[in-house]
Length: 490
Image (cartoon, rainbow, N blue to C red):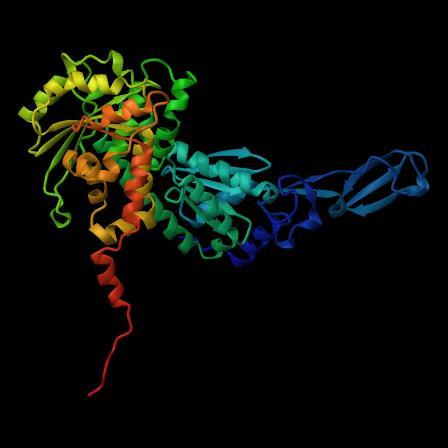
C-alpha cells in the first residue's frame, strides 16, 4: 500500500476548496507545492495590450527565461518585462489526482470520464468506481446523482469529497438506500490510505458476495426489475405504490404482468418463505400460479396451522374478476397443491390486485367456492396492503416492537392470512372496502362469505396499529434487565 504524502494531500485538499475549481485560476491561488507538478495543468496567457495604464495600444510578447518581454507597438518607452508567473493560469488535473488516490489504494484505473463542473470518475480494474467531486457549489445535487447512478448500475462507489464533513452525504445516501454501495471519504483521509482501503475492501467484498448469492438464486433472464429489487429491497414498496397509476395512465405496455409478478414475489419473500423464479411467466404454459409462499406455524403465539399461499397477481388497473375463468386454471392450482405441495394445514388461494371492478370479486368467489375443500379459502390482497406490510417489515422500530411481543414478525401477519383467526376477530372481520355505491349491500354480502378475506391498506394498518399498542412478555423481560438492582448488603 502506498502511503499518501501529508503535504501533498493537504495541498490537494486546499486546491479543491478554491471557488470554481473546475476552471483555470491564477497560479497564486494554488499551494506552492503543486506548482509545476502533475496535478496542475498550466497555460500562459500572454497580454495582448500594453501594460501602461494610459496606453490603449497593442503589444507583442515573447518568453525570456522566467520572464515575458512586452513590446508596445505604439511607444517603445512602454516596453517592459514581467514574471511569467503573473500570467500563468492553472487548472487541476483531475485525472492525475484520481490516479494518485487510486495508487495509494493499490488500485489500477482503466477508464476516466469527466462530468464537469460537478465531478469526475474512473473505473478500477476490479469494477470499483471512484468519483471525485469538483465543484462544491453544486454539492447536494452532485451527491444525489452519484448515489442514484450507483444504485441503478449496482456498482460499489468511493465518493471522494473536498469537504471535511461527510454527514450530508450519509443523509443523502439514506434517501437512496445507497449505503451498501457508496462509501464517502474526505480528501484529507488519503494521508491515511489504509483506513480508506479497509472501507473500500469491505464494501467490495460485501457487494461481490451479494451479487454471487443473487445470481445463484435468480434467473439470469429475469425481468430487469429483479436487479433493482435485489440491490434495493425497499424499491418493492415504490413499485407496489405506483403500479396502478402506471397501468391506469397507460405507461406500462400490455403483457407487462411479469413486472408485478416479480415485484410481488420479492415482497412476499421478505415476509414469508417463497420459491423463487417459478410459476407465472417463469413457467409459461405449465398452468402454475405466480407465487407459492409458506407461513409456518408459530407455537409460541398459539398459531399452530401451517399455511400454504397459492398466489396469482392481477396486473390490470382493475382486477377484472368478472372475466376471470374458474373452470380450468385455478382449480388446477389447488389440485396440484393438494397433491404435490408442501405439507400444510391450510391453503390460502391468494390474489394480488391493483384495484377492483365494482363488486365482481364476490361473484368470482361464488364461482370458485365449489372448488374449495374444507381447509381452502380465498384471500384478496391489494398492492397497497402488501406495501404496508413491507413497510412495517423494513422499518426497524416497528419490526423490533413486534419482535419484542411475539419473537417473530410473521405472527403479526398470520391472522390476516388465516381464515379462522381472521373471522374470529370481530374488528377485522367487519372491516370492508369502500365500493362507492351500494355500500350496505356489499357489506352484507361480503360478511356472509366466511371463506373470503379482502385485505386492504386499512385492514393491515388496523392490525399493525393494534399490535404496536401492546406490551409483550419479551419486552418486559428485557426491560427488567435495565431496572436498578435492589441489592441489600448482608
